[in-house]
Amino acid sequence: MIRIQRYSETSAAKIAAAPRCIRTLEERLADDLRELAFADQSANIEALKRRGWSELTLRRLLPEATKIARRASIRQVA
Image (cartoon, rainbow, N blue to C red; front, side):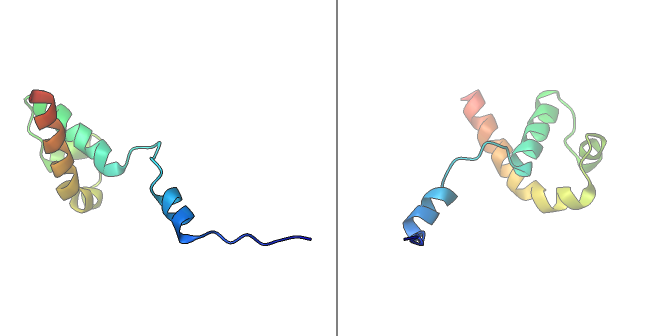
């Protein structure tokens, strides 16, 4: 006899909470921001465009990426 096994909400939460193997776009942008900052270059939109980021992507991701970069830089300096 074949039984259908339904996944419970707890197993779905475990799958959702599993660590990711890939970095998010925000983390990648934060790394670029930190590289520019530690190289004493201006981290403006034009410099990020030269690194391959589009303006629409920057507008969407920049607020969160700035927070990530700031937290990572504080950890590194401290």
